[in-house]
Amino acid sequence: EAGVAQSPRYKIIEKRQSVAFWCNPISGHATLYWYQQILGQGPKLLIQFQNNGVVDDSQLPKDRFSAERLKGVDSTLKIQPAKLEDSAVYLCASSAGFEQFFGPGTRLTVL
Amino acid sequence: EDQVTQSPEALRLQEGESSSLNCSYTVSGLRGLFWYRQDPGKGPEFLFTLYSAGEEKEKERLKATLTKKESFLHITAPKPEDSATYLCAVQAYSNSGYALNFGKGTSLLVTP
Image (cartoon, rainbow over all chains, first blue to last red; front, side, top):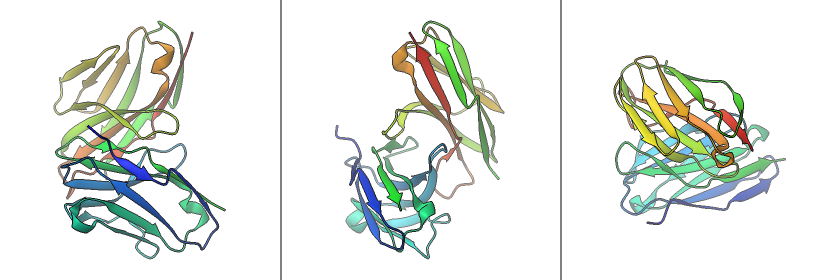
């Protein structure tokens, strides 16, 4: 069974630029999550989708971050404009029940 | 507010030297407690889910236990390949979804 796919794996941008990340969940998983993991910390939830509807986006900085999940499968997370403090690994996870399975993440460096 | 605290932050063991990692939690209604392993440059890899106090689960050299206030991840006779960061996370009934609240992790190094 294929796991959660993410791209790109690495991205370096300058502050105030925009960036987008892509996630393809495990086939058949209705729930998709985006987490932010800052170096030395555990992952922190940004947004949760159930099919193509948002369940929880309470910790998403909506002035600069946006996410969508069209057709209830793939998802994109966008940051516009980026700040230095957005440097982190962005993890996508999917689940069919309680257990969540993570992708390899996208490491973002903002200069 | 839900809180998850892991200790120690870092642990260095000799190969074969057994030890335990601790995860203390405060949550309003625990739905589940999760253990993940994370290798450098990779996403967290699922290990165990525990749902109620007294529950135990084992996988190879790892054994996870749960009480009403904390969970332990016991590592028996570790090998260098067990070196990784171990993350603990809780899932609460109060969450609108199934979001996980993670601790900062314990970085484990096992030397030959």
